[in-house]
Structures are given as C-alpha cells and as structure tokens.
Image 1 (cartoon, rainbow, N blue to C red):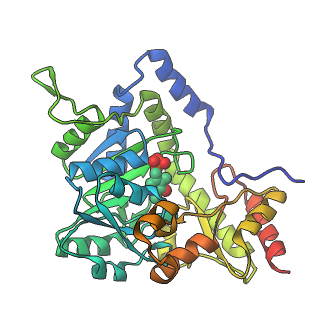
Image 2: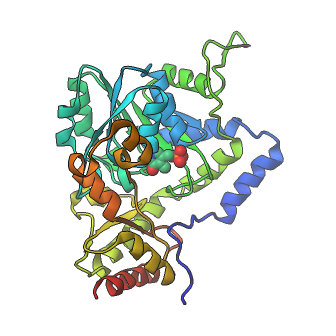
Image 3: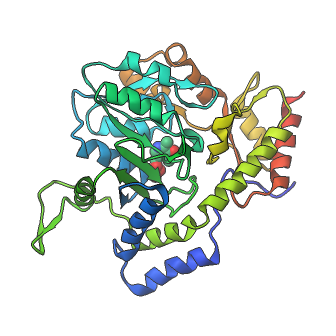
Length: 370
Ligand SMILES: *Cc1c(COP(=O)(O)O)cnc(C)c1O
C-alpha cells in the first residue's frame, strides 16, 4: 500500500516551532504581547477595524451573541448545513436557531431563502463561509440592513477569502475565525473575533477575561465574563503561519485545479467552478457522490490509503436538533440534507503534492466507475 494520505496534515515549520519555544522561554504565557500583536496583524491583513483573540472559534460566536444581548425569545438565522457549532451557540444563549437551506452548487446559505424566515423575533443572521468559500455576504448584509438585523459572519474556515474584493469577517457586524487544526492556520485551538469599533472590542476583551476591565489602573468586574483567553504561544504560532497564508491559499488553488482536471467519474459532482471560486481558499475540497454509499466509500478510500470524511452536518438532522425541533430535514432543507448525506471532504493542504491529488482522484474514479 502507498503511504497514508490523511484528510488534514498541517504544516508547521521549524520557524513556527521556534516562535512557540521563544514564548515558552519568555515566561509570559497568556495574553502578552503576542496576543496583542496577532490582533493588530489580523486587522492590518484584512482591514478589520478591531480584533479580539480568544480560545476557539465557538467562543468567538458565543461572545458575539452575548455582547449583542441575544437571548431567550430571540431568533437567529443559520444555514442548515454547517458545523454544529454555528447553531449550538444560539442554543447556548437560549435563543432559537432558524435554519435556511444552502445552495448546492457552493454549499453556502441560499440568500434567496433568507427573507421568508425573518420574523419579528429575528435578531441576527449567522452566515457561514463554508469550506473556505465566501458566501454572498454583501447580499446577506443588504437583507440584514433592510430588516435591522445583526450579521455575525462564521468565517471559521475562511481566513483570507474575499467577496467582491472584501475580506470575509469584515462585512458583517462581527466576524468569527477558528484556528483548529482543520483550518488554514492552526494553533491547536484558537479563535479571533472581528468587531466594528474599539469600544466593542474592549467589551469583548473584558468578556473573554472574567468580565474584567482596568479602570484607573485598578481591576473592575462590570460583567459576569468567561475565561475565553488565548495563550501567547498560540498567538505566536498563528503569527508565524500568517506570513505564509497567501502562498498557502495559492498553492491549494493549484491543487484544486488538479482535482477539477483529474476527477472524471460522473458520480462525483464537483463544486461549481466559476468566478466565485477564484477566491476560494479551499479549506476543504468538498464534492457530492451520486448513486454510491458515501460512508462505504470513506471506508474503501481508507483501505486505499486515503483519509476522507463527510464535510459538515445538516444541523436540523443532528440528534439534539432533531429531538428538539422535529424538522423533516429531507423535505425542508433538501440541499443541506444531500450535502450531509452525500458530501465527501477530500484532502487539500500545504503538505499535499499534486501527485497525491492525482492519486486521490484516480482512486475515486476507480472506485466509482464500476
Ligand atoms: C470549525 C468551525 C467552528 C468551530 O471552531 P472551533 O475552533 O473548533 O471551536 C465553527 N463554525 C464552523 C463553520 C467551523 O468550521
């Protein structure tokens, strides 16, 4: 058997590792100058007015809801196909997630279906830039403005992606990113939240740190906060990788081209390739498989030395949501349901070679053509 090609294998260079060791030797482990520097660099990179680094990409979404005062009785619109965290945070503040189906060509929220879900209780929309492709965020923002709703961009997978030349996470009122190992840049765990003003960032900073503010050089606790802090060695690790982000995205775009050329099975539906995909950052190369048992295919691919998985969940079909809301997902959210049941995430990352992509493609062709 060939070497095993995992679904993800993040590249950490000696420089990245040295950056972490440097912080460990310094003794300043939590929220020192590296966290502050990361926040500054991310703002410079994306032209976001403010950024707050936190412990993970779920904490960012949670803080955005908390700081906006969203809670019981409120409704928040989320795509039916995403990672469960997108909806879990809405449940965690006691609000109700209202699901909208996705566009099967791109796996992002179907903007045409948002307005019909808006009620007098709707407070916010959490659009997701799924798999590293910017959704129609400018359209979402227009709808939100018309109905006076907040937009919290879940850009966990889409650092560096753009819509209409503008970076994801900077169009909405808040932008949320994750540094989990499945994302473009990783610190093991980590997240960052973009905000629109320094005042808002200060409140988010207080909430991430037990609700603490420094007033006249004294600690005050005006809020009941969380511990959602990021360590300085995580921040250093992210900063070190940030300089490679552009090159990493361009490399993955080349790998994606190889998938488009080499996958020939008619039972594999590739994401639609058009103008939009030029800005795809390819956190995941996600396809649909037709007339095949997707889970069995994952097992067969594993036997051929290839790690794959489903891409994201049809959230209303996940046990908790199914039990609570009893949605008939297959009929209410057909595209999300199909993306969940027939979706397949293929490897795409810096350490992967074009030869690897050709091998994955050829194996898929072989397994699905007979
Ligand atoms: C990964 C991910 C999250 C959660 O990020 P964590 O850092 O793992 O908490 C949220 N939303 C989406 C769309 C994600 O892909």
